[in-house]
Length: 110
Length: 117
Image 1: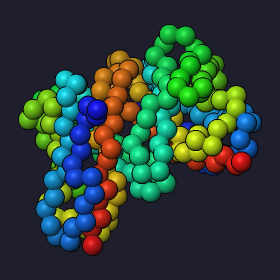
Image 2 (image 1 turned 90 degrees about the vertical axis):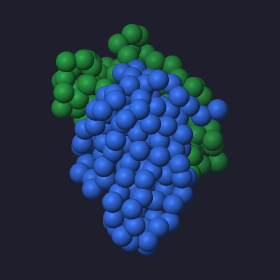
Image 3 (image 1 turned 135 degrees about the vertical axis):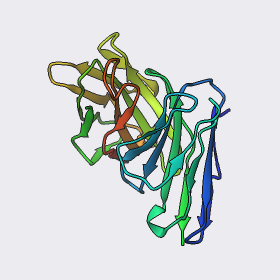
Image 4 (image 1 turned 60 degrees about the vertical axis):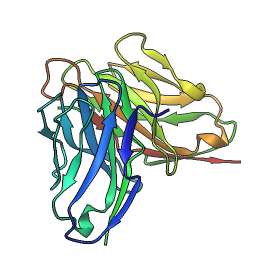
């Protein structure tokens, strides 16, 4: 049974639409992360959070935004989707020594 | 700042032969190191982790890795490859306390392992 949930699993959407990718975890972890991964490529950190009301930009610049109003929830929003946003987005939570990854959202913007 | 370099983008072995996936890291503070595996269209699965205890770490599915501070390496090995080992493998570093990167996971570029019958 998964402890971290990402929805939707797949999303195909038109250019200019606003989208929110959901990520929830049931482990009470303070730290949560969003990674972007293109096919066959490494994962790049785009956002992270150390707890409620904490959000930081990651190593890779992204036009997306995140919020952390509740410990268990870390949604990622794109205000206006573009084809360049087509990618897989992975959410993770954890502490220094233990991390759990979601199954990812594969986003295609047409 | 922390970084990870996986020295081989592709590794190809025959079933039953040893596997070696190489990883070098840099970190300003005492790091934790991980190996994750990603099968096609599947999520990331933790193989093993080093967290400043024993330098030789044993993981799942017969994999192990040795932390060598003098060489800043954390290579992943398996004595005998199985067809089911074919996947992409990521070496990951998490920086220790005191640094600005504390708790952040930095991924290597990934190594695709192919296993031939």
